[in-house]
Image 1 (spheres, rainbow, N blue to C red):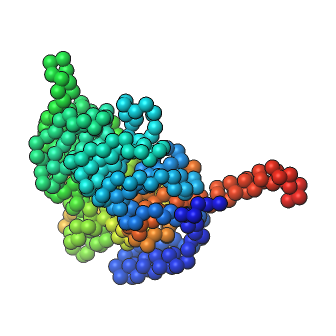
Image 2: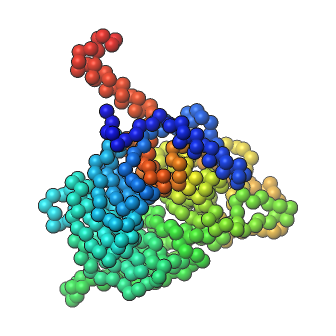
Image 3: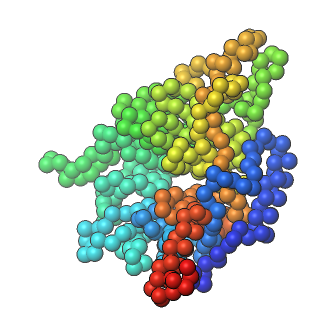
Length: 466
């Protein structure tokens, strides 16, 4: 029997109907060419769901703790630890007085006798707390902290300053005041360096470790990269050779991770919904939110980008877009992740969660690529010269397509992010204060049947059932 704090749903009619109605109204209002899928959804495995209720405000963060547990956090300042298999609420961690701004797994401290799983949370109340996820105990708490947190062998935090901390959360060193904007993202790169996104700038810092001559830690500013024209929203490592950044106005830049030079870039994002007129002109999109790059994910071959309401697949070897869904959702795409079997999952401000499959196209009519996005070194710019439309379409055709195979409707507000468990399904969190655990219906049905036969066998009733 499920715990009383859980609400098991068989796709509740009222929430589903209201979400569907909002989707239809938004579609009609925007007249967007949103791809739809029938009710059958034969390729969508997630046909069962559990709604988990514990939060009282927007749930913004999910972090996986191990193969069967995850933690959620958000604007109510609490952290909840859940069982991903059953949806059981295991722990509720209270200690912050304002919204949580970052959460990350934390290695066991040397001072702790027990090697329990730990997490670290940062809050708008300027405190950081280290929690024992097995007991719910506060291991350590530090005040006057800023929000962005990155784990190396030591720890970094960002705000107006970049601070370096040891595993006991003792301050080792910090930079001088960087910017009123604050550090929005941090990544680790080789040569004991880190990259910080500060407004429209990337700042390279080098960590100086203690030596025989000096026992002090230090952090030195090495270089500032000023190639972006607007604030940087996304910053991730994509492999051992490159990292990528995306900005508020649709700029994507791929950087060499060793010498910090630009490998590829796109400085203008042209409205992909606009069609070429007789003069072969494209108008620049007027709404920045429609072109903001909110999130990246990647695999060995491709970078997947959430650009405004669309999804783009950029092949690193071919150096071009190989597939796109210009209107994947009715509102901005907030989070994407790569799934097995060439699948991609995305969630949006419109409250939807959608599953896509990357497929190679058959020999069909060519689909033009948005010419001003993800091009290499300026190739693919708009040409006002007339014509050769057939030839241009063949040259710019995307060899692959993103096909919608699943549409998960359950949330009534913006879906902030999600986690994927290979054995336990998907977990989504939302501004509606809810967490939904999406289950593979076929797998769950098989497990229930197995448990039933095991129970009958234990009671000696199996022959009666047969």
